[in-house]
Amino acid sequence: MIERTRILIVDDELVIRESLSDWLNESGYYVEAVEDGAKALDKVREKEWDILLVDLKMRGMDGIEVMMAVKKIDKELPIIIITGYPTVDTAVEAMKEGAYDYIVKPFNPEEIDLIIRNIIAHQKLLKENLFLRQELKRRYQFKDIIGKSNKMQEVLMLVKTVARSNSTIMILGESGTGKEIIARAIHSESPRDEMSFVAVNCAALPETLLESELFGHEKGAFTGAVAQRKGKFELADKGTLFLDEIGDMSPKTQAHLLRVIEEKEFCRIGGSKPVKVDVRIISATNKNLEALVKDEQFREDLYYRLNVVTIDVPPLRERKEDIPLLVTHFLHKYNIENKKEIAFVDEDALALLLQHNYPGNVRELENIIERAVVIAKNNFIGSDELPPSIKAAPGKTAHASIVEEASLSLDEIEKIHILHVLEASDWNIKKAAGILEIDRTTLYNKMKKYGIDRE
Image 1 (spheres, rainbow, N blue to C red):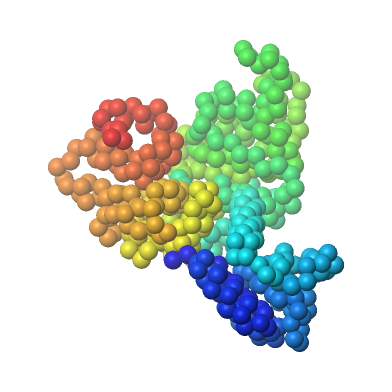
Image 2 (image 1 turned 30 degrees about the vertical axis):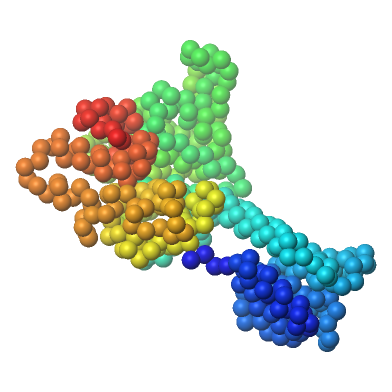
């Protein structure tokens, strides 16, 4: 249940306390009332309040004195001054000392309700802005990476240790585990944090385009090169270059990358003038590079150049104690994005989330919570809001029990798995293709082959 706005009334007149309490209770607020400043301060120390209504003229401490004392306990608490003496000086003094607003006796309920609603809207906006600022920082700050499990704590300790060095780092982990977040955290904790962090997905571009993306090109270097263009290495000078999916880089580009690492300079495509750069390289992959080296698909010398320090990011299924923390985080995030107030995930739904194996890792969990927030009709998420892939028998995914049937062909198993991943990613083709580690065209072709569509 969403907690009601909590209002404390401070007034030495019984009739004012009772009438205000009745009006505000009828409007759905939680209300308490006290008759003097001392009791008000006790209440503020004991509990959290959203709004204070304080009478200006009271026996003992007056309203201004109460307000100043309260501000020492909670300087952000909005206070409305109640006054029977509506002068300009009164208003100026109250506002100067930190009052949010003031109301004049005799007052009408609609005026008070309007002021309170404005305060609630203002406080909500402040909280949203704070969260969005934290989200912006979250991509860069080591301390904001979510994970209390031993495995994640080990990762975070290693991140903090290596970040201050200038060593080349390789991050290993399955798709969706948050390798780029780790890379950004390393950059944010490094001496290069004031300079650029530049990311390149090596699997997203064909060889010729990737080389242009990395090293830039001169005007006229190829058809369509109408102007000189700086590459990612130049843009990351003095900063950090993150090479994601490094295992998908072609042998030719691997050779060029090795030369840049060794010589700290390169030529733009179509150019002859060397460009010197000072770049820290962080690479990432979900592939077994040692196996690729054995198969001569990845250069051994480049592998050792990139793999000075290795950080293994565990899959979500190996750190399930982090799931409740991640659920709370994503719930907060998508409440704000969708202007909703989903208060919690109920026990049944959380139990289902904890038993799932997450082939798409944290990215899959985030998508599940986003979908649940969007479709939820109540102020909580229950099992009805979870996708069918989550509602499997304990310890199994929705398709696991089917795959166990020995009579299924490879095509049938592939179809079932693709369906499962599509459901887990809410039929987002880009996300599903990422989880399956294929490109979108291949996924579309397989969907057509197996007659898979959302309907």
